[in-house]
Amino acid sequence: MSVNFFSKALHSVMFKFTPGKRRVDEYPPNDRYFQSNNPSKDASSSTSALTKLFDSYRDNPKDEPDTIGVEGSMRYLQDLGLSLEEPVVLAILTELAAPTMGELTRSGFVEGWKRLR
Image (cartoon, rainbow, N blue to C red; front, top):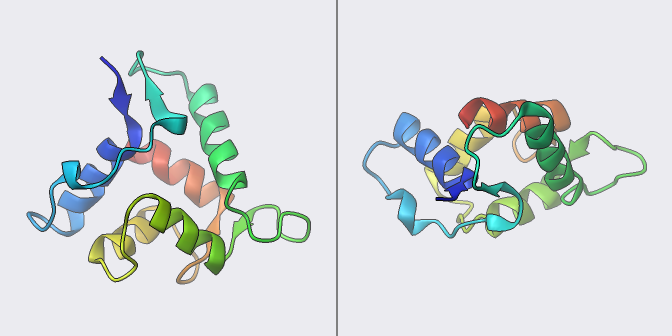
């Protein structure tokens, strides 16, 4: 049986910060990067997949290779099927160690999602 990484992570974040507000099955699955038949995926492949995902949302890869700016963060959250007004967005940004509202660092993104897994 495959495991949907984002569903599990969102479930974890939602119930930590907004218990009972929204069911995890209401979020669309994001199978492109985190679906696996092996739930005990090794850390290097998980890091690689998260890095690839992070890179796809960077606003200015040449000048800021380790930052997703506001535009990229908005695209990322919308691609997860989240409205920017939902409280779970603040929870996700907190778990991903966003230094400012709408900005994500590579280390915070990768380590945050790995921690939630």
